[in-house]
Image 1: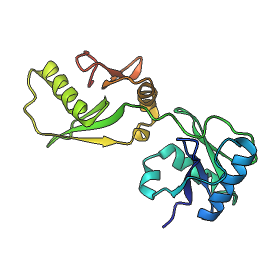
Image 2 (image 1 turned 90 degrees about the vertical axis):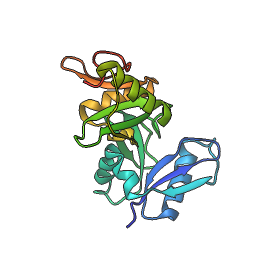
Image 3 (image 1 turned 45 degrees about the horizontal axis):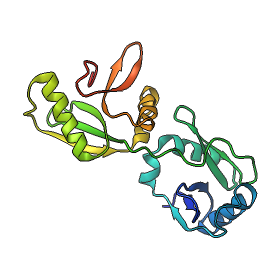
Image 4 (image 1 turned 30 degrees about the vertical axis):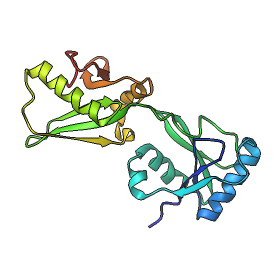
Length: 200
């Protein structure tokens, strides 16, 4: 099954245009029209055009929701990112752009540590898997004196941080690393691994 959602890059931009269209040919036409109207500095021909998978789209719930809304009207659409709280909106290629065509890609990655057996979870924000593992061990040894239990750490899509965890994405954009914790008054934040709120 197809998603009909395409990422299209110009030769002069590292950020893709996100398009909903009936097929790749239609998406190519949307790119050309959008480029002519809004950004003539982009290459006339797309440098790359890729249809996203269902898994890729499912890992981006806010964009998937905007796609479902756009599909209600049988047109081709361009998507714009309005911010972590608001998410995405769709416009036709000739309408004035809003927001940005793509969100920033932070250097910080989101990792989830799960304790084998009891499923206890820790949200880790680090620059690499190696850093995430070290941070988890340092955090656990600081809080509990030793880290001798079995655990699994996997990288996750930051777009799965929804609802009150959206603030964690905003902190990733500011290149904040550490362990997530929740405070009753301030909500979710990324704390240094040895902070008393880390992992709470």
